[in-house]
Amino acid sequence: MSSTQTTEDGKLSKGRLGVAGIVFFVVAASAPMAGMTGTVPVAAVLGDGVAVPGAFVFVGLILLLFSVGFTAMSHKVTNAGAFFAYVGRGLGVNMGVATSFVSVLAYMTVQFCIYGFFGAMMSFTFAELGLDLPWFVWFLIGWVLVTALSLFSVDVGAKFLGVLTSFEVLSMLVTAIVILANGGPEGLNFDASFNPSNVFVGGITGTAGIALSFAFASFIGFESTAIYGEEAKDPKKAVRRATYWAVGIIAGLFAIVSFAMMTGMGSSDAINQILERSDGLANPAGVLFSLAEQYVGPWMSTLMQVLIITSLFAGLLAFQNAGARYFFAMSRGGVLPKRLSHTNRRGAPSAGVWTMSIAGLVVVGLFAIFALDPILNLFYWLSAVAVLAITLVEILVSVAVIAFFMKNQGANVWQGKIAPALAAIGMALAMYLILARFNLLAGTAAEGVDPTLPESAFALSPLGWFLVALPAIFFAIGLIVSVLDKKENSSLTKDMVS
Image 1: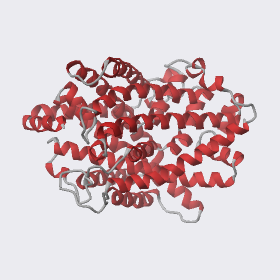
Image 2 (image 1 turned 180 degrees about the vertical axis):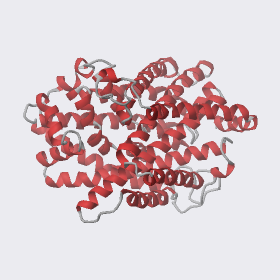
Image 3 (image 1 turned 135 degrees about the horizontal axis):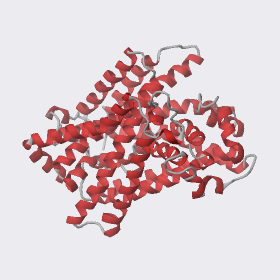
Image 4 (image 1 turned 90 degrees about the vertical axis):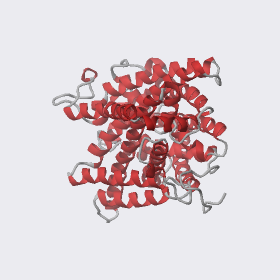
């Protein structure tokens, strides 16, 4: 199907994406290069040390359990709203609408926070080349490009992300393979990085919890596979395969590359090396970049400094597409004004795209107007909110899967009951860890509190408590909207059946 072929207004283009295209959107959303440079060094120093690779494996297993029930539902419901449609079918329309509000909060805040990181990285990088522009100018340039690309057919975005993501993943894998083949100063120490006793050292409420909370945060976006079901060539098979591929790729990539980083520095001295290579965590990206330069060559370090920017841009495009489709689905179901279900001749949810873009311009613009830092404030505050919101939604989906298959056929006991129940327990653990370490994730510790200490759990500033409450506030608003609007409930029930 040509990307120039027209599509009926109010409908997404059909048959545009295969499994690979959906996987590219999802892996791009996880921004693996940004995760390796920003998450791993901090999680190692403040968390469970060289056992960070094992933390990624543990979290990946929990998300695979979640994927079992999640993909079983995808065989019953094909809807661009994905999560809210699943919850609506399992727990009722009111809960589905409430979930949709939390989901929108998650996708909007994660995109806005990446805009801050993108603008800052562009400003730092080009300042070194002699072009010194404020981060907000670079945000505007990125904003224009992301909006324009999102208005094309979805397969155009998938191809673009495919190129960016392939280079990003390939550069990290090449570096990891070279380091592992070399063996580093102490050789391969699988026990130090993957032994459960090391992964959970310090306990869930202590250092292990810190590492696991960062690991859970690194997977945000994997669940967006179902959002593209209506545009997939074979929705029933594509969503399931893409979900497992995405979780496997993200978990495997993070585990392998982080293990290579620890090997390259030597397990016994890795923490000291991280602090030295990152200037005391002031520049966490310096860890991977310096290892790439040491083991592969200066050219790889230079390439990675470019690819981290394309990684962030790919994440922006992925979440823009996901958020736009959520607005489309909510509008089509009667939750939001009907005009937001408008699609252009390419089959893109253009009204949703512009809603995401305008909201981003307003929110990020406010941070710039009040001279708030694009990383310390915009990125850390909103990324923590996004992770908390999506975790809440994933718990609701797991419970909804169980409720749905208690009353309907289409899944065996493992798919419809055991796996989602285990996933709900695992995601509840994730929720606890994120709440307990929110002061560290968001940088909103109470005055005089050191968030890196185990005893600092739940010690939040007033701003921190407000940010923590945002998902609950959006859930309550959605619930009230649904309860008060009976006409909307009728319309949305029909949409959820599709």
